[in-house]
Length: 242
Image (tube, rainbow, N blue to C red; front, top):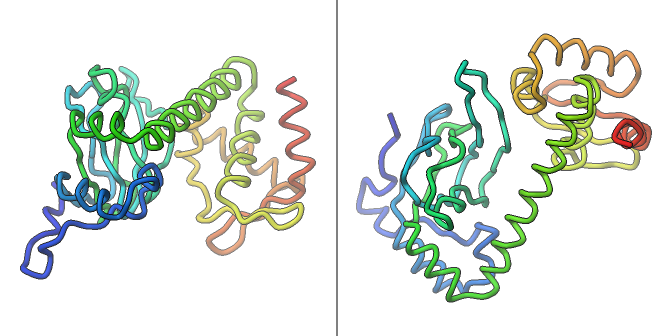
């Protein structure tokens, strides 16, 4: 059950701001305010479904507060995780573009996650009327294709240990604050989440991370994972990728 509308009192007469949405940065603040007024706003608890896989809706979702995860489930119930989208991100644009059912589900990662739902038709009108926004959308979709291609290659050619190493390197570079040849990942990745990302089991991830720690790549501290010798880890990942 969702947390309801954020407009539950007189003090909340204005819709939330979309100023933090990266894709909309080319719009003026007046234009962003008009888009915000067109949105349906809703808060979600951690684990609650924002968008259903195979659903026929075509709304585009602006993540204003909190974070969401894009996931899919096999017929056996196994979770495959594609991406975590923090505040400032957008999900659901593919269905708005092609009118097809959702290709994945979207779930809230944090209680209090605030989503602005913009209808697919309004989103298409917005993009066709603003070339810089359309270009930002194309760049985002191109980035998604590149990431998916890389994951397909990894899943097709690498063993479980190499896939986990590759994912740790990606997190270290994308989420961690890189300092010289080390990086810090906060919070410490959950084994089940890593397993869903790289197509293996939680037990296998635990074993591989233990091996990486013994080899000097990882160090667990309070609330964070320190990745040592990024150059060596990058070289190892690139070597097995060929």
